[in-house]
Image 1: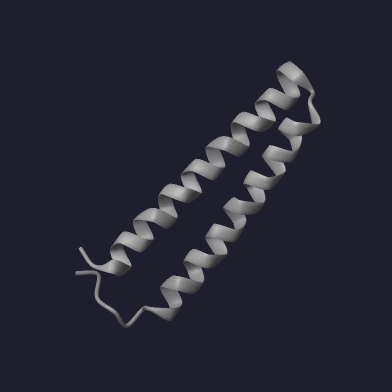
Image 2: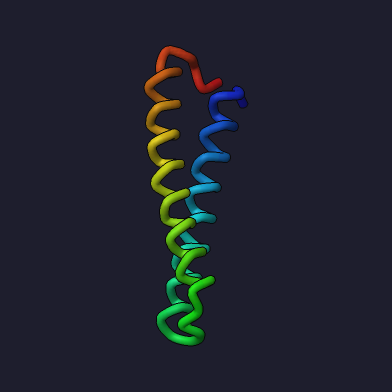
Amino acid sequence: MSLKAIHIVFIVASCLMTAFVGWWAFREYFTVSHSATHLLFGLASIAAFVGLLVYGRYFLKKLKHINYL
């Protein structure tokens, strides 16, 4: 497995984790606690998710000539 493939796996895993944390934080905010901390965690997670998507797209464009194996 190449460094490019491992990098993509970690970007996808990070996107999934930030999306899950964002969903969890918003669910906690709107149903249980109404705490500003949960709202901030949710917003930060969604911002990180969008940032990771932008970075992943940039990474794929930059290294499109390198093989995955």
